[in-house]
Image (tube, rainbow, N blue to C red; front, side, top):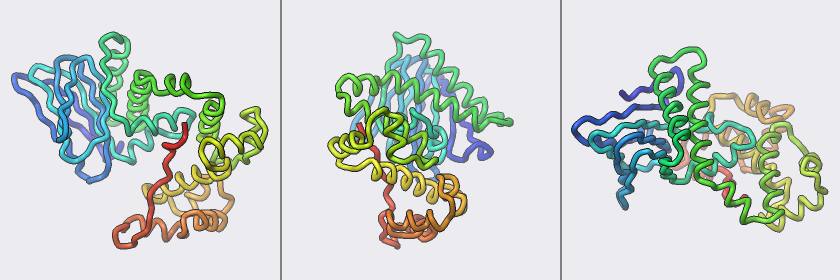
Length: 300
């Protein structure tokens, strides 16, 4: 049973897979054509993820996350049992949210992760519970179903994040400067809407303004204020492209006192005022405008 309800989001679907005597093959195409991501939990049996270039075997118990591309398919072998979820960009943005872990989850989602969790029985139970709740909430939407689904998808991503060991490896292999930058990123994620100054971040990090400036310049080739502005512009672009908020509402949601101040700031960084940018983003091919979002991949 594949279920999706627009009352929660038209960009989320979920399915419990229980194969009988035959293999089940799912092409998993996105109806909207937007970027989408797949989460897979296999609790019994085996299968394969076929990308066109390679065939990736999966065997229960297994938790997988795949940034999906056209032409990919999922094959679940006869007798196998598990779950599958699909999320579009808008739904995934709501799941990731804005908190200290959001940066890590944002980096995680574009990685392919196939986690064998045979030695983690508690993790298997937690993941199965999360997938099952998603299917139930989508099938019978009630008050709070959107938040429930987002919370369960977030649980799945955090389980994958813990299993991947990305943060532990990063912290073991990087020095003090990178740890300060990691903490700066987390503080920035929590406080950029409040328009913290560079001095406020330095104070929270218990280092001097000059030291924060030197670390950012040495490690990333950018000043702290450039990084702060990039985060604000990233958020503004995302809301202009993907939300129905007015320009005034977008300005207020990211901490600007008035729309004029926001428009001047946005145009100085992007080259277009917000309203013109929103219009161009719906027709990139004709406008020739570069509306690519800021990436945080160069942060440690």
